[in-house]
Each structure stands twice: as structure tokens, then as C-alpha cells.
Image 1 (cartoon, rainbow, N blue to C red):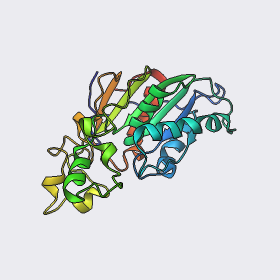
Image 2 (cartoon, rainbow, N blue to C red):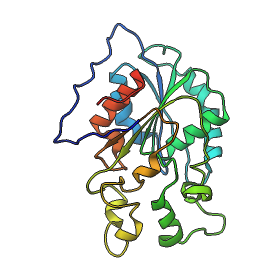
Image 3 (cartoon, rainbow, N blue to C red):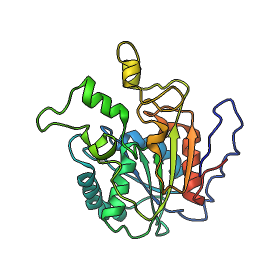
Amino acid sequence: MGGSFSGDNGPVAPALPPADSGSGSQGLVILVHGFLRTGVSMWWLARALRRYGFVVRTLSLETLLPDIPTLADRLSARLPSLLAQGDHAGPFDGHVNFVTHSMGGVVVRSLLSRHEVPGARRVVMLAPPNQGSRYAERLHDGFFRLPWGGFDPLEKLLPGHRGGCESAGEPSVEVGILAGAPARPSGLPWSLLDSSPWGSELAPGPPGEHDGKVALDETRWALADDFLVVPYGHSFLMNRREVQRQCVAFLRNGRFER
């Protein structure tokens, strides 16, 4: 499935109603951050999901050096403690969902392919490099000229067989993908690199076809149940209210609002 959101000046779907305070939890949501981030980067999204009645867990993974399978295994090892945590919102309904940002989506694909997660139901991926990232490739091969011996942190993000994204796995859960495509990408480090002599060399594609780091075609995954394009950049996609609203829609109904 495919679709697009017309942007801040276009028609906007009605706001989703908040959860009925007497209806109990709508499910557990585990938030998984992207490359070189921590769980703090998902704070605003966690706050929004809790307002809609979800029990939310955040965590931080060290993402610089481990490959995708190692990160998936480390996330799996953290799950028992995440599921056992108390929460003021009360017990969840048995469903385990994930909302991910950037490389976090690839890690969860690998997690659900390599490990059994009882109750796993839905995954919302925000700007995932499911096919790897040409931006990472250009940094790796040109700007930084990696690898430097055994230090090769971008290798896992390279496109195709060179990286670990495309082959991360094909879990049997419902997946919705939100991809960003602003008219002009922004956000660090893009704002520092989008100038001579690097701008055109590092760009993942023409303007309007990428979020500054990941191109639209790189976010796609053949087994996704829904796909929506929003006019926002990569770095802070998860903080946008429309993105948060769409996360709630997919977690509730298995599809985005249009």
C-alpha cells in the first residue's frame, strides 16, 4: 500500500481521540532509537503515546560498533526486564508493539526474525534504511574513506550486500512505514554538509525524494502492510505531531490515517 500526506498547509485528517481512561491499556510499545542516538531521543514520542493510553518502554543501545544481528541479540536480552517493569498506566493487554526510528527499524526486523517475542503484533518504522543508505555509503567511501582497520561503524548501513540492512530478516508481524520527504532536508548533520563541496555528492537523491539521510526507495520493504510519506526531515521525524498521530493510528488499527 502507498500514500502521502499533503503537508502543513494541506488537508489534515481529524485528530485521533485520546484513549478512554476507563478502557485500560491499549498495548505495550517498545521504542527503539536509531544510529548514534539514545532512548532520550524518543522522549517526546513516548510522552505522546502514553497520552493515548499505551504502556511505553524506552531503552538505549550502544550502536556505534555492533552489527545488526548483535544489536538484535542485545535487544532480545533486554526484553524480559522491559516487560517486567512496572508502569503507572497499568498492565498491558498482552500485545507487544515496536515504534522505531531509522536503523532501529532494521534492528527490530532482525530481532523478530532471530528471536521469538511472545505477543509481538505491530511495528511502526520511522524513516528506516530497509535497503541500506546511499548517504551512509557516500560518507563511508568518500567523505570519511572508511574502513579504518577494524573501526567501520557505517558498514552495517551500506546498501545491498555490503551492509546488514537489506538482509536483516522478514518477521511475520504487521509493519507500517513512515518515510520523510521534505522539499528541503534539514537537521544535523545535514545542515552542515548540505553545502559546497559536499551537498550534491552526499545527497541520497533529488530534493523531495529523501529525508536528508534516507531516500524514499531505501525505506521501502516488500512485506510492509502500509506506507506513508510525510514532509519532514530525518533527524527529528519522531517529534512531529502528525507522525505521532499516525503512529497511534497504525498501532490501533494496523493502517495509517488518510
